[in-house]
Length: 251
Image (tube, rainbow, N blue to C red; front, side):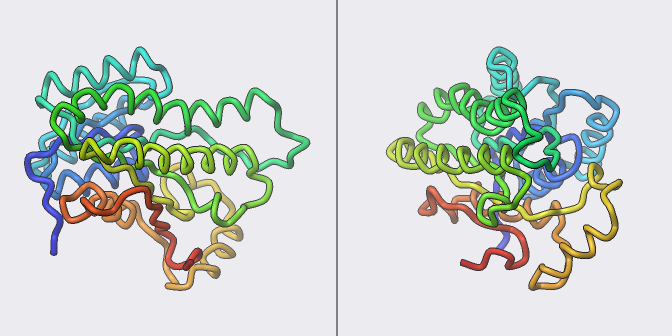
């Protein structure tokens, strides 16, 4: 069964490249109208917009800082003005996550992780909920990470923020269910994209050896999981986390 999102409108933050681009493309191919979001790389974002339109996906491009509440409010307003609704929200925007020992981190970096992975979804939810509640339908799918489930060392700031994001999602799932709105999370493993091009090959080889299915994941693998959660077929699935990592967290 192919999940149809025909007639739906989806906003994917941080979607000019990488996982966000793969998610946006997959949702678009399922029939959704797509609002792409970027902050810094205008050229890449415009290339992604062209690519989606070449695939007959109706899409628009909006520049906004997904961690800034005023810009988030304006972005959501622009999507609703252009497409008439916003049915699917996918908070995906992310900064760099350097691996450091606990002694090397500072408080400001910890706060920046919290801002991106807890406060940004919070601001986005506040902006989209009036429309979703009025229509009695909505899908919020947070993109988290396997790092929380795998307790990855030397990643404490990122792991803590992702744990907070998962906990927030579970709370929102219970709070919003009576309004016809589900909240779920997709937790990818390490999926090499453009920003991983300079990572050591030895590290890639070591990680690949730990994936039970024996291959790298792709942005489309993550997009397929998001498309499921966004679909009507997942209307009874709520407050769940789906790890998309080839079986590294099978429980």
